Length: 153
Length: 160
Image (cartoon, each protein chain N blue to C red):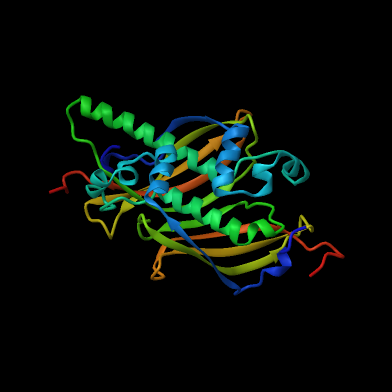
């Protein structure tokens, strides 16, 4: 049984998950499979790009954030997936060797009129480095099952 | 890529197709999105999805490789003509990503890009900002994903 239902997420709730070490090997492996551009694959070639050195794919940041959300709270929850993502902004390059953390803040929460078994929770996620600088910020709404009658609080 | 000044809003092209399999859905999900409906058939059947389905992030991310390959082919054609290849910068943002339908095992998604908007870049004077709309459509003709992304593209004649 899930431990966290829609009712457990309240506006203003904050949390921090991680850390997770982003290695050069992971950056290059992700890029080789999904985003094979020089800036993500090769130090020498990356210096000549606007990234100014090897940096992870922006999609890699998104995938890491998804994994940190999953490990942080989603796998213990009544998650029913997400209808989409409002916005992702890539603010700073994802550099090899960074210990990233995921900061979350609940922005909004509402029940669903059409589907009484679920509610919607809008969350802002910031992927930050050791100094707290935001590398990537993402805002999305997820669908969570509501606590069934009789389930423990 | 073409120079920023040559980009026409409304231009569109099919990038290619990607087929989702049990193996590639689970491989992606185990690494990046291990929710039960992406990794376990029985749990997926019991969920509101009704069957194993791909992580929405996988559905978005596989379009990138198709885009990179598309741009590489364009760059090779430009080089073959003896012209200089236009530099595209990193993506700046992604907006309005919608996962409209689940993507199930055996689905083949066709990805298309369309130029949605162009505007000047304040932060990078030698570049303009191009917004693309990427869409993915399954073999039944249903739209499964749509998103906007903005990328810096080199302007003509501003490079020193």
